[in-house]
Amino acid sequence: QEGPGFAHGQVCEVALLELSGLATAIGSLPHTDPREACDLVLRYLPEIPIWPQLPRRSFRENMYAQFSEGFPGVVLEGERIYVHRLEPEAESLMGSVIALLEENRVDAFPISDDHAAGLHAFLSRKGRIGNPTAIKGQVTGPVSWGLGVTDEGRRPALYDDVLAAALAKHLRMKAAWQEKALQALCPNTIIFMDEPYMASFGSAFVSLSREKVLALWGEVLGGIQGLKGLHCCGNTDWSVVLSAPIDILSFDAYDYGQTLSLYPEEVRRFLGRGGIIAWGIVPTQEEPLGREDLGSLLARLEEAMGFLERKGMPRERLLRQSLITPACGLGSLMPQAAARALELTSALSQALRKKVVVG
Image 1 (tube, one colour):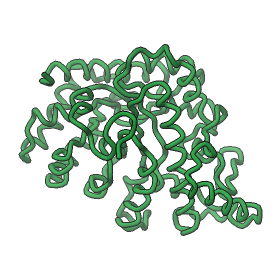
Image 2: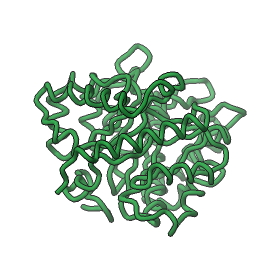
Image 3: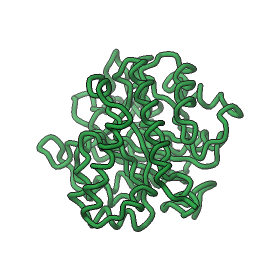
């Protein structure tokens, strides 16, 4: 079944040609004024703009709190978020919410202005965003949300089977609601799951099986009609990520440019089915960002692509099936540095597009 824009579950050829080498971003910006953040996004990312997450504006816009709204028993207490699992009202609400989830009642899971001012400021630009190729949104992935949010006893929600099942369905509906809202601006949407905790997958700190991770991702991604992406800003077992039903793999190519080449067969299959690699080649820390320029980052990108090229993947295919992004979110930077990162992302994209033969 196809969504309203791109093909569902696989990148169609028309979409692939349109996306080749374009620039987008991960999500967060350091601004507190949502209008200023939207202006910056539209200035540098006109082809695939994002709605900006603004964690400095409010704790409610922290990546864990932002999508918690409406989850049974969730408590925001100062700068802590947790689930009050033992509260009788929470148990009753859990049943009601699960019923809404099973009925696919997307409209019952909105993301309010209080939790995402950048999203609503972006949505208010309807008719004033030009003619983008696609619009990108993002949702916290179930692994990271389930490990970052605990119950009242500080046990990660993901290790409670009932909470784990509910949170995956909850995030599925948040992604679906967001996608539907963004489609009012552009029929072609891209929704990323952000999974920073996958950098710890396989370690003593994260006790999760490959099968459980893929089942959780499948649940969330199953609610998305357009293109689906997954972002991990550290090193991980990329064979797991590449086994997920995603169209776009987003990774930190600045610090971990060689890591994908350790999984050549998985990457080859991913590219063979039309998958796109989002090269996070622009650093998101102040010090390296200050010393890099367009030429040095182009050389670094060439080097990162070269690791895969030496494993038999044609350079032309890597160029065509690519996006350019910062390595991670920009929320930890100062606003001027975040603008510099987006300026470099845009300039790199323009330089890369000149190398891509799309005719």
